[in-house]
Length: 262
Length: 201
Image (cartoon, rainbow over all chains, first blue to last red; front, side, top):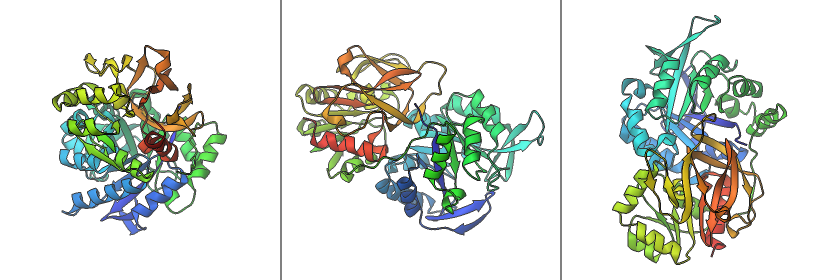
């Protein structure tokens, strides 16, 4: 049976790990390669490196980080954050990452998704959507796509945008709720469910995890294929085995790490 | 020497690093003469089936790959590298493959998420040196939209359940193909690479 995935996310700036709340404040929280190794050791199903470096040397910093992580961990990983051009995608994939996650640039240049999928396959292209809920807690909520770290509204409807991303070749959709991000009050379950029922590709839920019960809710009720979280793992509030043990008691299929003498 | 064949579809470094991690050097090449002289050949692959065949053909690699398999040297196809060993694929039109294993490459039916992405279980149907030490129903990392459907039951080594029970490891003699990514499947995946380097002959 295909297991639901638990994915720790590392927010990286200038080659260091940082932790952001609602995409703004950040503080240094260690070496991303060490953290990647720890998550790999604990049995993470994948890793996401979210790079928020803004400098001109960005591409070299990312390439170096991808190389270092792929030296040390033998699980799949995705690199996102400021992926703007076809060459950015190439740098990520050729460095040893499985997937490039494309967010704002896809809104500005949708062909980037098409070209990336044609060249590297749909499995290598993740369409990442930052969503803001409009219409509050109404019975039929709507979500708007925002870009530039949540600062710029686009007027696009999240459901329509998700369909277009898949149509253009995104093999997976990451849904990041800007409202929930950093709050630890739970994922936007309705958002995930609405998109999961609409598109055929797997959905990765992001933003708002405060613990295993939130993950259960978004994987079960929200129909997400994977749950991504940063701070709860990062500050050791929960370990990955703890989360998986909890999910298993709720009847969710999870993978446990198997150790072998190599 | 283990040779990893580059058919232009990215991410070969992780396969190379996987072998290094278990103590075996492997070189990445797109030169036919390197395939001809290799003791063991690995054909990874992501992306589209048709493009991969076009690249292999353009690179003059088809004959060296077939010779290598015919001569009984250990061979390992990974993901699309497994699919390329089959007769033909439905992916974006109809494409002929290498035809080592008679059978087709088909798209997953409606009703499941495509691509399949994530860790799924592998049920061993036949004992082989490649899977020595691998427990039954262990999880490996898969990413694919198409699966292989061998004509001969004897070519099926292990199966995985996703919409249907399909062949996730194919093998005959010293030629094997894995639908999942051993280089991204932690300890058990690395054990398969180690077995390929040390036990398959």
